[in-house]
Image (spheres, rainbow, N blue to C red):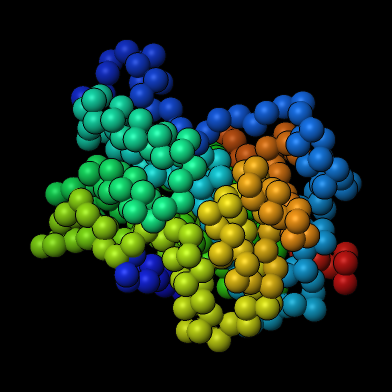
Length: 326
């Protein structure tokens, strides 16, 4: 696997289990609305036999698009995994008594306010990100990288969307580079990318001085237009043809990234992205509605290094689907 790259520059837990549940709930992990018209529409969009609906009709996965010069770019939160990766990291750190109850509650509330506001202003995004960075202020990067590894095993691997992992494996089977492009901390993006054996993970960079995090950003969050700039930079450095590349996201915030490639796909889209995708004719895949086994569950932490077994199944399925269309 290629080395991961950083984002472009210019980017006392309570004893009461009920209290734990209250303060550590992922604010982006609300269940989908069931039984409404969007569910029926999404089911129609994915109405194919077996698992072939996951990859069926995606131009970037056509055998004619095989070979070097193409890449797939995946958002992380609610695209690769269900919920928020930075909250998963915070939960892992909280499990080890890194924070007080008040600190966790304050962080969760601030993240919830930002998520619920739906604001896209870069200054607001930077403020929300720096609120999260207060968790790591004064700590060493090696310590946070280790925490990210543990958080992956304990709070992320069981929340991976199997369908999105399969899409990533299908791209790899065609010889494409596969990148994670996320506003999550680069340390988290890097761990997820490495465990899934992807090309690399780009994320928001925290400022470091004297081998300690300062609690501030280095540059801007990898969000919105910054994601589009990041994938264009990757394309230039790796001689990629953007018309052959694919991008996957759940959020209308990522329309700039999705619009920059020849094959955009909406994954578990929010309302705004769903509407935009329909108007543009972009494919939609919604695992919240289709497939009871869309989230990988029950994967023991000891087997989580690379999600080897699940990835092997994904490769086999992806190759069979691709060969079946050849």
